[in-house]
Image (cartoon, rainbow, N blue to C red; front, side):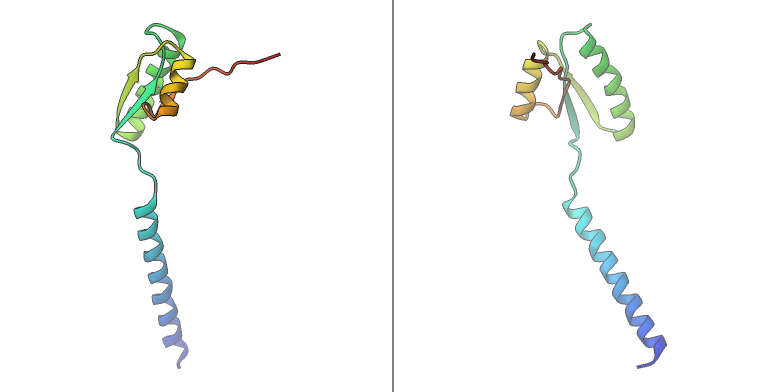
Length: 97
């Protein structure tokens, strides 16, 4: 087998591997939901203000609809996140002594 034929076969093989890898990646990667729900807290509070800023950035970066879900705070936000009722939640860590 000539050297040029071997190079051609190797190039085709590498191209096929690359194409297959891209196909697998596209079909198995995680996708963002069409609507992203963020658990915040009561309107006017610090959590809600932060979430409004986050909403603007996420909307611009992803092109997705961002929904703010008003809650009573960290405990409810965690519960909604655990249940899958929201996609993101603003939480505050409790420090124990």
